[in-house]
Image 1: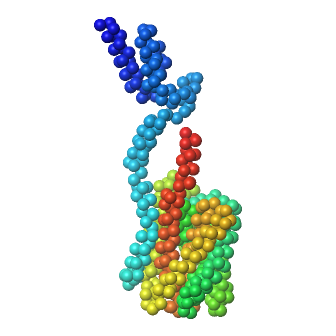
Image 2 (image 1 turned 90 degrees about the horizontal axis):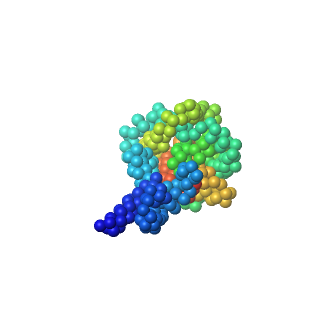
Image 3 (image 1 turned 30 degrees about the vertical axis):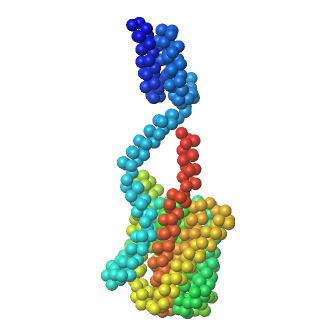
Length: 418
């Protein structure tokens, strides 16, 4: 009986030690010293050293005072990660839903454009009215202002001057020449060629700031690039159009600056100031979602207003082809130059989006004022194609496959911090 008891005790203790080995606070040496029977202790030392080897490896880096300086063992890490992921799934569904919605920006933009074209008589007087367009543009710029800060704007002006200069050259030298080359290569008529050149000579569009945000670019740099080309374009665009087309185009530079100040600068800097005063509240605002909604209103209203000049013209296919090929060629060449110059990834994406996104509204107004409806068909098509292309490029760049390197770098940094 005594022999059975002496044999069962070690077995029971070994089983207990195996169970306790799953708890991080269990200490094998203390459990061995608690037994006074010499023969079971020898047996226990053998079993405990074998069953708790992974625990000893995890606790190998304990310091003298018993504090843990190494991360928990892998089984605990997996469990913690699973609980954290379950907790994130419970607490973060709105962000996940908004992320999926913003990635579908090309779909929402296309739906807005098609709806505006098919229901132009209904949408034109409402979403296409001047108050609706002005308010939507202000909402878009306010949302973009909330995503940046005065410090970011100052950094963009001081650090990224080469990018700003290259954007200026692409916008007012490369794009006008590309517009002339694309229209000539397609054998377009005189009106389509004029409309394409007009689209290539105007400054950047305000929707480029939203596309830069969705694409993982530098929003502050995008804002600076857009504002600079918009302000300078009021004086440079007439010179370019006169030189390339031999036509005199008059643009009221002071009126353009006044409109830019009230519709773009005021809400933009209002968002920047509000974000600086209330940063925690600003982080809760879904700026990208509001930007997409505002862009949808602008696209639907613009498509409705330009439906007659686009669909009523027999050569609308040529107009659509020019409005698509021009931004694709310009954005691709800008991205190629950025890669050759060794720019960082956010600057590359920002430059490509800025060169791709022109201001078709300005070109549309100039075409109707100084040319004819056929010339305005290219900017009309650009109101739709530029918005869809910009949203599509931004959505593709937001996919995890194009952000794997940055994600792995962030993960590695977090592991080193732990």
